[in-house]
Image (tube, rainbow over all chains, first blue to last red; front, top):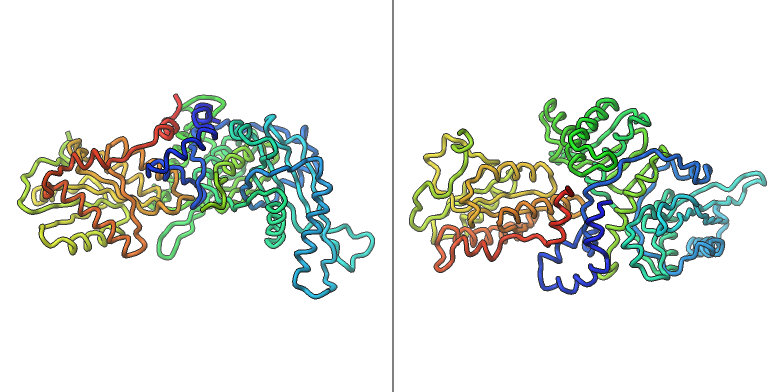
Length: 354
Length: 191
């Protein structure tokens, strides 16, 4: 984290400044950041820590970890939850399954459908929280008990999701009132109708609000650079980038860079500024510009005129629409730190006002 | 030096009575022709010439036949990084005399902040450091293009000296882009 920016713009200062800036147009517009139409915190991250391999299996139960990796998750941001207790997870499971059953049966005549019962489990994934301000990760699974199942059939998982906060901004977390728990990143995988129901239940029970989180091309650049930097420890096999160019008809460009070449480029970029532990945004920009100018030299196409949509390596993949897949749990903390930060930045200061 | 001949100088040529010339620089060449049509149609009293370019430096061959440029407008499309880069490179070919009220930035695509927020801050930083006004335009609707053209026409007439008691420099001091101080701190990379 860039310590200077965190110190100079704490959240409490923002609520004070907002009232001053209503008269001055240029101040207010600079705060309308990432979430369209909503007032959010604007902060440019200028440096990050390099991704270090951390064997998460020492801290986290490997079975729980296996549920989180190798699946594609759709991201949303969540505002802080009011009176959420990690001790009452069993009660929450019962309430949520009752809610889902009620929603499913709403408006329908009594019907013996194939989905007779939903069983919801809430569990805590201990060991993932990095700082003392981070709340523990909560994992939710919805199992489906089909009517005509025989005794031995295990219930099938139809939906899973998790709420997490990894390395959240300490100023922001400490500024929250005491009854609020902040788990700003919500990842879901499964049927859209179930996702909607889980979100409505959370919104009703904890007075929070969800919003779909899209990513910035800059975030994708960060992840491309961080993953390439891991190549020396953990082979990324190749760096795949996909752009969409605004030509008529739109052109999709997919570039696969050999892992060693990407690593050499990244190494050269790093040699010019050699702070060992942190990566600056200038280095990331030089890395991406290097790849784009290499492409221009061969194909005479300016990739910077297009939009970078997807980045994937053997360690994971990320899509601009807000989809993430982590294949290797070693670098999970770094990726989740970046995504938690994005979620906090996209959370509106006054949700629902605009 | 080669760079000196390529640079566009503001006071090299003599101004012509009741005339104003504006140069629209845009990498994508989409908005400039529409703006040019409307600017020329809207003004009947003054002789307006609109010159279009993709980037600076301007071709040397035309240097003698080109009239004196009163206002240079850089049109930047925030949806494309290339557009921002092209504007940054073109700005270097303007003589420093231009930045006293004869340059303006026009930005489109700022509505879709999910893709363009960092680019908008880059363009703002550039406009603020060069002391130029930063205008936003809506280029998808015809009303938006007309509104942008009318604004540019207003600035052009002041820059060309056609408005009594107003000069380009005085208008510039009122309308130039400013950066809020905390954002300025964040954009400067930590040393």
